[in-house]
Length: 305
Length: 275
Image 1 (cartoon, rainbow over the protein chains, first blue to last red):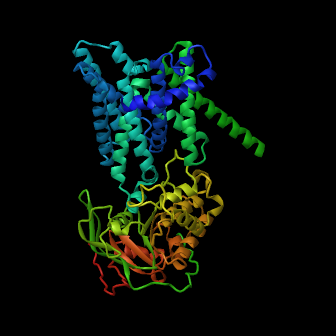
Image 2: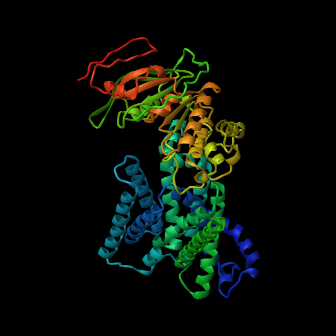
């Protein structure tokens, strides 16, 4: 039994336990275990959401909100190469491509060859184009499988993918929690961090590799085009109301989970795509919080005057 | 004609010891084929408050970065506490304070306490969950800069002066003995500026910190610094603040006339004829 199924065996009973209170006609199937496929998808997306939120807070501070998008497109290129080569697990190719791209982007930025956005844009379009060209040349085109990597398909999470998602999530989470303090120090003021004796470069590189791996683990679930929704939107929403780094971390998880559960509920009941509904829900929550905050501040100010 | 207002220099007894903390000799740095600083000789003793001044692009930050070992030097030598720069032994001994305006990312919510905590990290303790003295060190640093009342407030909500104090506290949190400040007064209003200078003066006198501060605000820096170093590619003045020339006479230091170079520390004078 793989790591993914091990975790599944632990979480599944909990999901079944709360399933009676889950609203909706179809949504409870994600919990009650009558369709293991759906339960597996939920377990996978819960793991990914926790890690993505943790990662997203740091990406946001570093002004790297779009790196998730870039790496997801690179992963798509990797998937296409894997599919054309007939690989059993195209995500392995995606992982290799994504990690290599992350290392290159990090090196280009730290050597100041290109600014953050430009290097991401080049990799994003270059690798997406490579994927599309290879697919076309090989005669495959955009099949259902390819389609699911672009837009996500929660129902395609087999045991093997669950294992990969679990391994990536657990290792990334352990690493992130371990390096969180020096990572924050390097993010807030890299120069001061170097003078303190922190290995700024190594930490930056490790962070890039973790980001690349987490993005790959998300591609199959929410789709290459929508990865940023879970990576950045909850963190950005949290940043609107958090008043300390710690509270931002907690709020990010709250918004991440609300997006996943709210999005999946709507997707199940309205028969819409899971990944896109999650992304939409996250964006709507962001909009509501942003508008409430602005209105609230406006009234506070008018009262004060 | 701008006038310089000189407040009374600090009358307190300086606790300057004989040991050099920073020893720079014959340092030159070339970047992209251009000589940024050359033939720099500079010794700084424990407990000194040195103001490093000079026009924009005169190499002040370059000198600071070369001293701490973040820039490749082309010739000469630098030692801090008798060590090579960036040596592990120096971990925590040096605190760095950058401009208030540029030292924090926008998209971050961080309380004063969380920020100061980052200053306690170094390469040996950074992966530990907590170290026993950490809370004490943080308390002490926050107290030194007088931010106890706002320690749980988001740094972004503070005034420029308070934010700069928070950054100084971060630098102090590792019990740093040598504090390097790169233009800490930029973007700070006048009253906060004076209280910041007072804080730095206290750190130097009461806590025995050694301070090397870059500023282009001559009036401000000469209120507090004991010693002034005027840099424009080379060191053109190095001596007690009282002997630092008035603004109009500074022109004579700027490469027009032969330069009076006063080096009070190692006692050797080197007048430089200009090109």
